[in-house]
Image 1 (cartoon, rainbow, N blue to C red):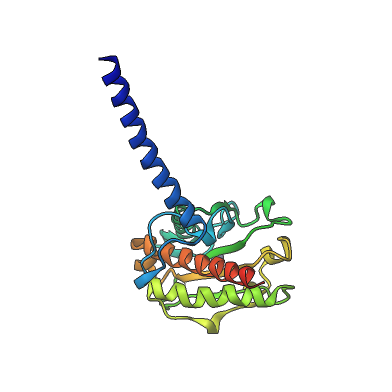
Image 2: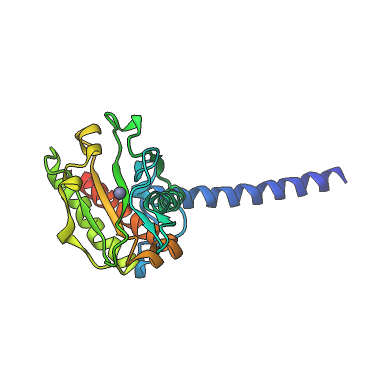
Length: 237
Ligand SMILES: [Zn+2]
């Protein structure tokens, strides 16, 4: 009897050991970048090696400061604010990036933590005015000391974001406010950073408010594209 019980216990132990070994091997393979590739654009569930343990900072545009753009109806009642759109998409983006292993922080517009901020990437999320226009635009610091790195970030945004959202670029309205954005001067000069206007509260309202997960996918795909390009760069060196 005792012998039987002992035997069963060791069998159960062996099975648990096998399952956990397989699990650890799978996780290790993902972390080391040995996981299956991004075939067909469908990311495997779980950790993305290039994002693992990387510090990603998102600014929820206007948070803690003002409402940003404000849309009103004919009676002057507020129907939508930019800050609420930015906050929802920042939260969904953070969730996506944490799921693949990144360490994500969401910052206010003038967050104290911006001062000297060191991170793998900083992206500030904003939306454009309530006019009946459509499209996104992104900008990096005009006077960056890491212009090539920032160009790779910009390239990732300009390819991954429209691919996920279907939005066209709207580059003619990139302003000085964007290329000389206040956060660019606060963070550590070696932190790659960009500001993204995710769409217009007017013409892109349905996308921004009814499909925020799709917008968040665009933002997180852009960040993952950049982290992957940086990982490849560091592998080359
Ligand atoms: Zn804004």
